[in-house]
Amino acid sequence: MARIFLIGYMGSGKTTLGRKLATRLNYQFIDLDHVLEEQAGMTIAEYFASFSETAFRVAESEILKSTAYPENAVISTGGGLPCFFDNMEWMNANGTTLYINLNPKALISRLGNNKDDRPILRDKHGDELLAFITEKLEERNAFYLKANLIADGLNLTAERAAALIA
Ligand code: S3P
Image (cartoon, rainbow, N blue to C red):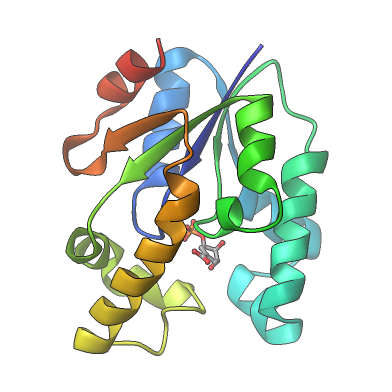
């Protein structure tokens, strides 16, 4: 049984890489935010607006721990998930964690207009956005850097990720 949890800040490419890696390894791909959206019947942005960020953090943690994972899976997680409750420890105990490490400027460039799908970033622009991500990433690195594997996200391909895991 193999479970590969992809972690990293918003825009690090967890979902895109996850799909490719799963195809390459012939594993199933699971996007936990997508599971939450299906279960709740609403988007993450709607979830934040209808409930609260705290409610979202509880819900995503419950989904992490209650999902019936297939035998072999690549799992893409929400950017904040490793940083709440004991989720980082839980993932390390129940699979292999791979952190996709990218600097704030690269994250912003990759997020592009898709940043508006993220309630936490939606209202921030320019220097304010850069300062916000820089500060948050520093805080979150206390959790992300507990990952079993750390990959430089700049030139990360499914082939490179597969070689790291092997
Ligand atoms: C969040 C990241 C998002 C989503 C939510 C909150 C975060 O997932 O879970 O908007 O706090 O970093 P992605 O990392 O897939 O964008």
